[in-house]
Image (cartoon, rainbow over all chains, first blue to last red):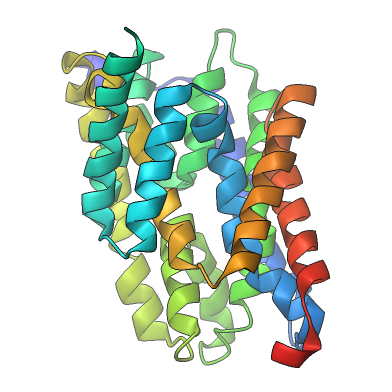
Length: 106
Length: 211
């Protein structure tokens, strides 16, 4: 049972630090843009944030891990382009990465 | 919400592999509640624990929230001011991406934001607990391709934003900058670098004619 519920101080310090900086980032945009109207080029820039940031987050996993991951990413992206539902895409990604790893490893 | 189940289970499994108890995994998910940074943190988890480096890396990984909350703040003016700050705690990559997509059609109200975002939080931390408690009995996540689920989710959301070749240019710019930065610098700077470069490209490609 101790294995299920064990906690310790270094863990608590890390969680506290991580939680504090994460919440700070979550509210900072709100504080920065409080009451400011955004349009034109600035709006285009802000609108691109989701795509740009999410792509950067997954780049090491899909472009710098191996051929199986990169090919699976292309497969998932194409399916998503044609509006395949999220759950289907997750299963497609998991399935193709397992299959391609197997095939490409020889 | 369905997507949070495999990802939460996966994260719990990986955390258990680094010595997290199920409760420790769950409480990190309760308080931090930011999947990408939690994956990065577990990846960096060694003894003795580098608390400061973990905190700084989390900050870098989650700096994208500054851009995200700046973007969403334009769409939540109907929400009472005090609640906006509380809502920001439960805005995650996925709920925020959904909210941004909905904001293309209609302004966001409090009910929509709570209804779409709040259930994700217990889903995330309960699955972290279950993943840590039973996940490591499943064997390596790679066997099931579970390690790729997170990428599949993000790819699907990214393609949901597709509006033509300019979106493609942003994706390529962000990816290229992230690859270059990842090769040059250790840590999570590639996230901010890719994010900023993609946004700059979007601003440069903007023309007032079709705005």
